[in-house]
Length: 236
Image (spheres, rainbow, N blue to C red):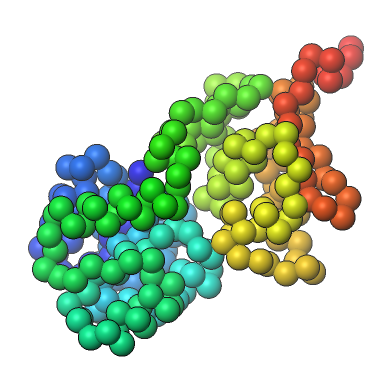
């Protein structure tokens, strides 16, 4: 799983990355909040490890921005030297999921990271089997989707939406459920965000019966994503 670490001290950044990489995680290090925000526009991470003090912003402001933009995911672990209760509460109140006091201890960092990942991605951490449906292959570990053996390029949010659909095939999914599962919050009755993402995904992944699946809009409720058989394919 992919972890982003935001730490401006080079020695601390190397230590964090060393601990996580040796434990089998992928880890990208960033020295500023701005560098992380640029990366989040292009990449998806399963966990953020954020230092409280950064040269261009505070960890509090960075966590707040991530939560307002990305919702409840990914989980965030605060690293801090502050021990005052009000500081810790402030960090948790803006959206951090856990905190760890410095100096960094390898065992504690791994334990807290693994705990957050288990809670946030129960299917991915307990059962990361590749999903194969029709002409599609969804790999939760590699975070890739292939159609007919070819990798399809999707945005991080589109990937999360596609993974949610493939894990819930055959179910009637309300917009509220989709919003909470993929965006981590209610978006609003007048928003077209979910519909727009569904439409883009339908086009990018060619979600059609000839590829073994069907994505259907259910009036006044939401969506149903299901497998199709040979009898559903268009006749010549």
